[in-house]
Structures are given as structure tokens and as C-alpha cells.
Length: 134
Image: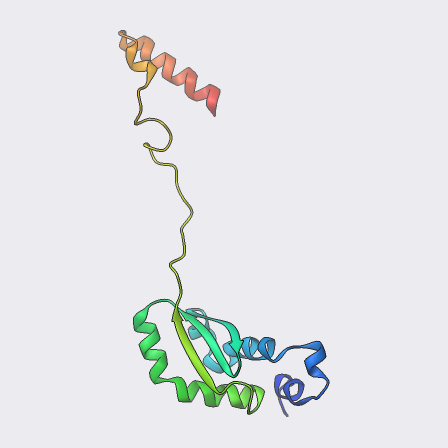
């Protein structure tokens, strides 16, 4: 049985409903497998070239050597003539969630509690300030 993506790609009225770019990008996971698709991302189809984001230069070089095999898998999944070439781009590094550091919270600046000479009162003052800002 033919895959739905191949049938849709060959259907003459499909261009009004689904673009060839969506078909090609959607077929990327099928062509390379879930494991490899987890490390890459199909971005867009430029003419007949599918643009793929990869994690780093090593992935780019390794996938470039597998390019013909991947193109054959894409052809089997969506049919001939849609994707004729692949372009691998190193994706910009993803930003991790920022954590508040001591310098950004103002602790690195002058703390008015340090002006309190008595260590017991200073500790009580800091504890009450922490309760108020929490």
C-alpha cells in the first residue's frame, strides 16, 4: 500500500491544500528515523533543496556523507521530483533557561544589612527581609 504522503504529493489538487514544503518537511522523520530526527530539524524547502538544521559541524559532515541514502529514503516516502538535494546548516546554540545568579540579584552590590554592627540583629534583619521578598 502506498504511503499517504506519496499519494498526496502525486495528487494534482494537493498544492492548494498542502504545499510540497510541508510534505517534504513532514517526511523528514520517516526518511531518517526518530533517533536522527531528534538531533536534526527540517526547516524549509528551497526550490528542490530541503534545508536541514544540525547540532554541530560533526553532524553536518556525517550527514553529508549519508546524503544520497537520505535522498533515496525521501524519494521512497514522498515520490520523485520534490526533493532533489539536501543542505545541512549548523543550528545556532539553544539558550538554556537563565538562572538568577548572585551578581544579577543585587547581592554583589552593597548590602545595607552589612552596616548593622551587631551580628544577631544583622541576621534577624536579613531573615525578615527574605520573608518580605519571598
